[in-house]
Length: 301
Image (cartoon, rainbow, N blue to C red):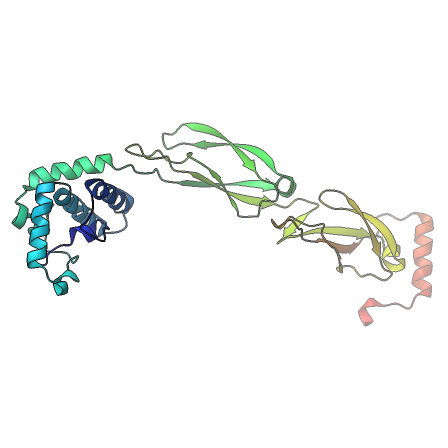
């Protein structure tokens, strides 16, 4: 049978510790390895039993002296290196053979203590997650939205969510204490709300850049022109060079989305040449004349 290092189990480096230090160490370890917060870890329950077992012995001055004498007498340095390994424990046993052999505590009384300890350990409530859609302009300037969600009790609850200016697509807003309720006096969990930024008919977000359409007439595209174009927060003047092609992109620096570092991306104006759907007689004549005198054929480039 391997002797157990109860001090190491409680995270203590030495046996020269006070009862208050033992109590603090026990609470830290019990909270860390509580089965209710380590449901996916199959070994957490056994570890939790070891923690209770160690505290049961070391918190009592009489059993602590007995343990210290036994440890110093029977455990050498070689054994001490292995001391934390699990001693044999039957399926329904709460305390190990090591504990029962040397301290003779009944299983029933120890069961009561573990249940009592479980009830005293504060457990934080689970976090919950949801997501909402936010327009690109609301995301850029910041806004406040109200959302209604159904609670675990089945009731509808309205939350006010502040969307900070310049939030990134996919970033999460945290509402403290709005998750599931804690147990044994533990804090409530938090709510995390994922923000999905929605493009609109004018602006499209690409990383930190904002893409918009620059609509030009055929003659403006051919001759060049200075035009006004809307950015997300103002209007900028832009020179279009002669002969610009549909599909080309003009980049306007520092007129895009906020990058979170005090700077901004660019506004990208994508050229789209638009022809009139209906022509006046004069326009038709001019187009007919251009057709006659021009030898330009885009299909032969």
